Length: 344
Ligand code: MG
Image (cartoon, rainbow, N blue to C red; front, side, top):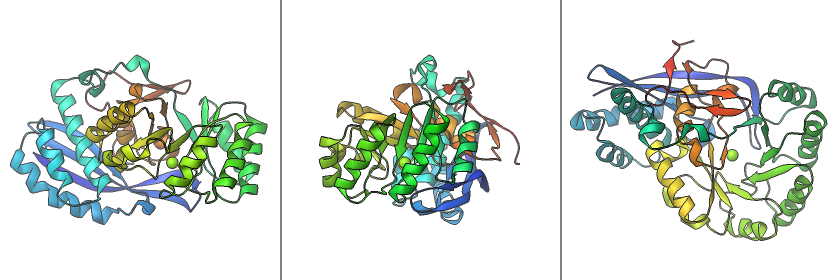
């Protein structure tokens, strides 16, 4: 089993405004796992605020190489992935890159899409939301027109409330599609948060993602009891072990491959969330179609998909899932369903 990796910088189509920052590119690492003449593809995406970098992923993958060589059978995911996880804490995107490459390799080796190997019906793939970052009204209007094919828009809020309200009013003047709101922990006071959610509920918003700080679980539980809209955890949930504590605090969780170490654990999280009565959303970072198409293999199992990461970049080096009138299209291709386009 040979693992190769090379750094890649994702160029964003628009500067991406979040509650805490604005950026124009995202560092990534592309991974290829070769064994018996078959190559599986994987990717790590490292938005800077999550603490991984091209240097840290490079170091982790070098550390992982002997482990992969020792097992030397990509089918042995239950041997490889837990051992990989225990090599070092954190490094979730680096771990996800290997998880994706292994699963892609398995599908290619068997000549089957991953969704078929896992008993998932591609005809049940959901709509995806399309994310609109915080920006000035002219740019927001241009972004909405660009997103005309998508039937749910996700709005990034959580700066000052007057700016947030202006953002929603600008959107509502352009479009009547359902909106979802991601506050990215931007609201600190629960009474304020409740007033804001009530205002948003009157403007066609479906749910709120991470209204308050990741550690503010008691405040969020208070808010959930009173909120007219469902609340979804994003920053408050990373791994499988985080899920049980969120019952009664949030209505659902946002699972992302780069947070949870990949497809193996993402599937487990879906199962556990369902058992606890939590709704499930599947999200992504800014990523190429490699990681987005991997996540999309699981999308028929979830309530909401936010898999627009590859649509937000200008140099996607993979062809992957399609979209038809805003709905995810899982193609009949082996593995995670991607074809490299060559490095742009
Ligand atoms: Mg979020």
